[in-house]
Length: 64
Image (tube, rainbow, N blue to C red; front, side, top):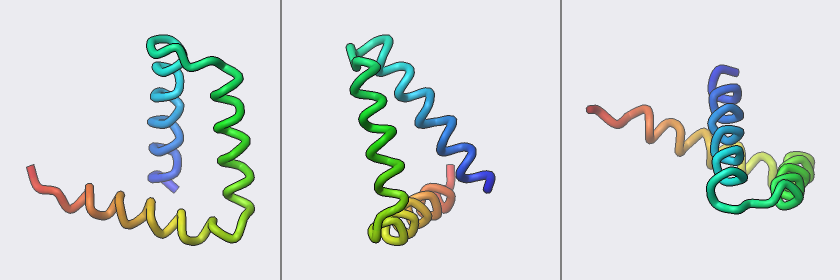
């Protein structure tokens, strides 16, 4: 659960910065959000979840 909230906040910040700084239009951001919702309900959802969990695990294993 903590990972999901962190990922959502991080992605929200990235999208906000892209809208303000890089010229991403709000309509494009809405289209990306809708794509995310449709992907979450698709048959690809388990593979996407596994991928994000594996990437998060690899990042957490990095020693500084």
